[in-house]
Length: 233
Image 1 (cartoon, rainbow, N blue to C red):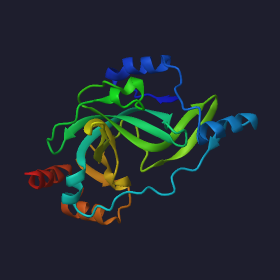
Image 2: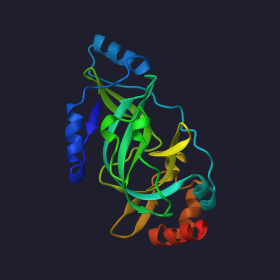
Image 3: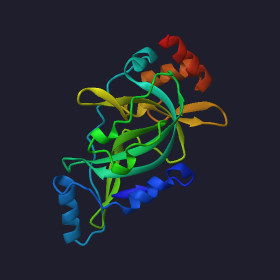
């Protein structure tokens, strides 16, 4: 288990300290542990394995369509942790994201992290303005072997602010939790510049949704906020 820390968010230092004392809880079955074991036998210290063959994201063409299924949030990314998925075949990266602006004003789901057994223990029961954003891929260390997998749909950066469209996970009996994914793909992520108030796409700027969003907002968060308000009333 490989831990990446946030150098400025002092409120998470206690969590970081807890993380450093936890034993690795990686899956011991599946493709990734087998490849790490083979790498050890071959005298390697690092391997890179293929990720997903394309990220299968639904086609979203309009803001109204996006707001129907996704929640736009302005967030600042903190620390993250990469683990092996339950079946041992993929890596999953968990990002601690502090909500700076809940743009629709909708109530965030309760944390509920304890009912999701695959959520890293140290990332459960965080503060009320934290969401966990998960991606597929990342980098972790398994029995001394550094394992890399291309990250999909987008690798977030610590301390960066983003406008993101997230979809909150369901858990039995079908209630939402504050674990979220970027279900629209890379088109769900926009890099925000706090000094100018503008955002720019992290994904394909030619995607129809991105083209329409930038045409209607000129990349200005204040204009986007007004559009969201009109579309959610």
